[in-house]
Amino acid sequence: MIGAGVCGLGIAWRLAQRGLAVAVLDRGAVGAGASHVAGGMLAACAEAEPGEEDLVRLGRHAQALWPGFAAELEAATGLPIGVRSEGTLVVALTADDRARLVHHLAFQQGLGLPLDWLPAAEVRRREPHLAAGLAGAVFSPEDHQVEPRALVAALAAATVQAGVTLRPHTEVAAVEVENGRAAGVRLADGTVLPAGAVVLAAGAWSRGIEGLPPAARPPVRPIKGQVVTLRMDPSAPLLTHVLWAPGCYLVPRADGRLVVGATVEEKGFDTAITAGGVLSLLDAAWRVLPGIEDLPIVETTVGHRPGSRDDAPILGPSAVPGLVYATGHHRNGILLAPVTADAIARLVAGEGIDPAIAAFGMERFAARAVAA
Image (cartoon, rainbow, N blue to C red; front, side, top):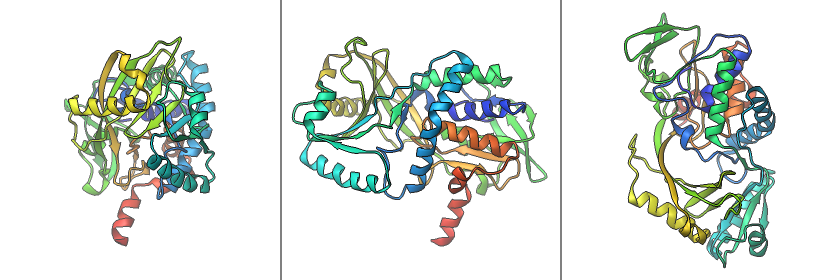
């Protein structure tokens, strides 16, 4: 397993439960990539966009799996993962925002998604610290949240408990291909580790793994995101719902942290926290939740989402036998963790392709290129 984010760890856990010997390798610390910075929103409904109907179906399937996945993980480890079920509000600050959201809501409801329009008075009744004069909000009761860092800790504990070998700070330089088949990996120090199957779950770093023919290297790029974390009083939080507003999202944690994210920047693996990035996030957050001006900043972080050509995940077998993809999740890695874990473990174990991921194979890019 190349990659120790939530998806890599989840797959490893499911494989170990099947009795397979699994080693998880990561260039950094366990869960230190996009999983460490993620907002943790389980949002298949509020973020549904035209042209992403297959992704919406996959996200809804993942949402249905989440309660059982969370319960099983917490029972196995005794570690809470911070699931919260207040739901999500997508706020309109102006009449123009309202018109855009109402138009988009019609499309989302046409897909059968459980979303409703709330008038301004009702929004402020539920969240009294929001800005006066807002124009209303879309409410998504089934778009919940989880604490990604707690999720990583629980998944790491579950994998070790199941017999998985975790090898952080172990950089994979290449996939070893012998007689046309993936036969293991070569580490940056030259060590070769043989394997019956290799799962590429390295997130934004997936394309940089050498050893594969060009057509088999997944078209995944890093999309930089800056995030600012503030500190609320946990006994009197300014916000309880996950909130989307023009220019930002806000995710309240049970311990009082308020995560404000995230910029979307095509800057490769740049890790700089910039004045412009922080300013844009705080300004957008202040416009919808003015009380944040009195909150201390406790953390600024940068992550790199793994974006594919169509911003949908790449899941399934590759043209190289023995190599399986689990990458390109973009902003949906946390949401899709349960379905990714189940489907990829099923595939590696020789149980066939889960129909849920059939639309997300690598071959779709070649097919579109021919069609064009």
